[in-house]
Image 1 (cartoon, helix red, strand yellow):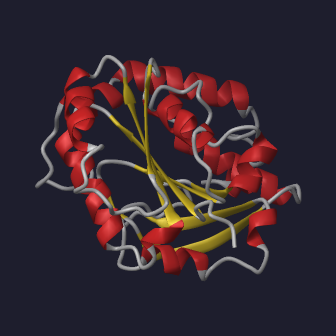
Image 2: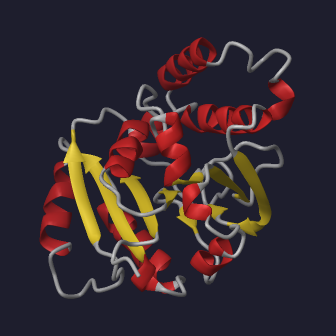
Amino acid sequence: MSDAPTISLLHATKGKPEKALATMRLWAERAYTPALIEYVLAWERSDEASTAFFDATLPTAEMPWFEGGVVAIRGDFGGSAPAWAAAAMASSGELLIQVSDDFEPPGHWDTALLNRLPPDWEKEPLVIAVSDGLRRDKLMTMFICTTAYAAQKGEFLHAGYQSMFSDDDATFRAYFDQSQGKCRVIEARDLVFRHRHHCADGSVPEDDTYRWQNRPEAYGAGKKLFVERNPTAYGRHAGLWM
């Protein structure tokens, strides 16, 4: 049996290190087999609060949560999508899971996901579509795929996006690739990884990170890039995604 982890959790964070740490702990507490999991945490080099916090916290013996290891990377990403992309490149697992500060996994989430996969899934280009508890369309706000699919695409999430529309891009391309016989999307919408976003949950305060990610410029730039990369998304192939 390989010593490499089976699952890589890819967590991009900015400006909220205490929340990020609480998120890490929650994913560990709700995992069934932590030995199978590695955690890759990515943040901006300019985020001094996160750097100081994680430099003091991550090396301590108080974090034996993920037996597959904790990998910390910082860089001049310029947004969450490039940070997730960099986290994927630094990972070593066979199943890649996008993690955000405001997503909460269900109990035994690792077993629940692995049970949906076919035999020898590590060799196949697969995507697992789960629910975030909010949306009713097919948009995957938390992207999950095999390393085989990311390798086929050449990326996990496209690093050209800053924040907005990276999930639209990943979702559209997954369903389009499925229509072309290049991958398979496993529908597992009964698995709810709850998205506690301030826009939908009044108990979650708005903060500088939310404001930066959701600013009009980010929407505009994201939509422009999405249309350039996916010119058929709003045409005859829109039904694959919306």
